Image (cartoon, rainbow over all chains, first blue to last red; front, top):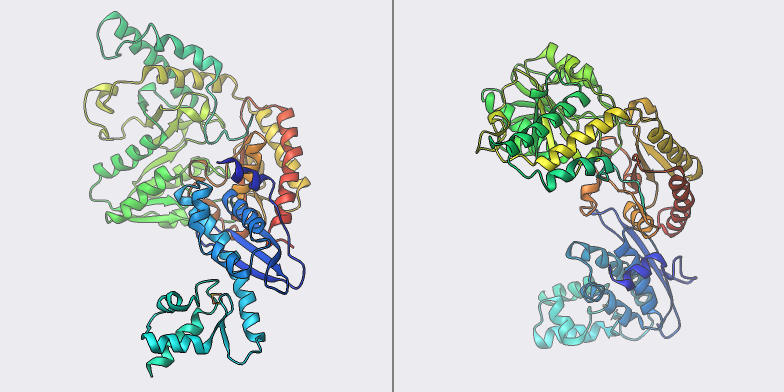
Length: 185
Length: 384
Ligand code: FES
């Protein structure tokens, strides 16, 4: 076990629950029975001011959560989501064994889920002229529709490549799917 | 280091080490050789055979065949019996066997055998009525362990043997690996046909085991080759290990009384159950029905792997689930069979005491553990 990992497991940082108002993400595994909960608090400009976690699981899960909660502080929700989308980067950095990568993944899933919760709320509360679809990359419904139409896009990943929408926490992906389906009619 | 993982393996006893040494230096011969050195080796092996036979109460030392480990003994027993009875396609075993039996039986199912898996109740005990009903005319083999490696729960080998004999023509194999050296065993007065044991569980080195084959039970060779072990198991005998196993059996017989180990285990178990509110014992509370050295305890809302890692950091060795498999995360089949709820099975730790543990070590453990558990409970997303 590398020192960073051991240190974060034995002395986990940021255990607990972020202060209200907070956005919470959960993740669990049927493989190993582990469970994780990660909550974040944001300031007005969508930067993470605080991130905390609770978990029951192995050393790798707990250390990953401890590290992630430290790193996302001060980051925008988009950057936090992108960090959560790349468990393999953290797994390599911590040199975890292959069969423990899913524990890093679980920690990242909890982080992404917390950002998704925020995105869903922000989208619903959005009061702009154009409906907001992707809060991570601030992409409106009209922009996405135009990209789909003009470029003949057919999949979510094509949309993401064209305008970033869907490339952060992923909470808007079902909405992008709906726009894609609507364009076929 | 505080070693509380004696069901995984044990330290080689100094007496065992001493007995083995000459066989790792000046006595290096092959026991099959007819010269003086070879004869000396042969004598050493036969002395060890007598020691093993008397520890497990065999009627005749000839009933002991040396193998490389407990798993080989189990594999040989099961496969050997079935090879002699090609017409019988039914096997009875339990859901809580060690992998060395369980995985062979899973394989048998794939090969077309009908396997009856006997369940256990919440205490980890068998229902003997279920066994009675499971026996059939075409039952070739019954394979049931003596002591469970995880919970230490003992199965009534004598009664089971009686039922098997009375109700069927099946051969009765017992995986005794976890019990030998911990509880008195007298095979000659039980209806046991085959009985597997392993040296490293009782302070002999790793790499040696034995299979008891009751006189008259036919069992074809598993490993083919030379005529060693009267043609029953080919391969040059691992004399130093066998001498070690003999010395370990003699040690276990002389110190047959396990009151010290048992009192340490009780001190630990009582201390944990009384001092930690989310601790629950797995297996029957009646200590006469469990091995004297084992406590399997679940800590609700907490993950066993993290408890293990924290204890490890403090120099305390335990295991979670089954020691050989703390890297495969699925909940233990034994606890699953006992219907231990998932939230508890995840946090199960096996403490297994041994002859070299001391009261101070137990006290240290009882001092360290509650702090670890409360830290983890505080961190748990499911705990209130
Ligand atoms: S809302 Fe996060 S990726 Fe679109």
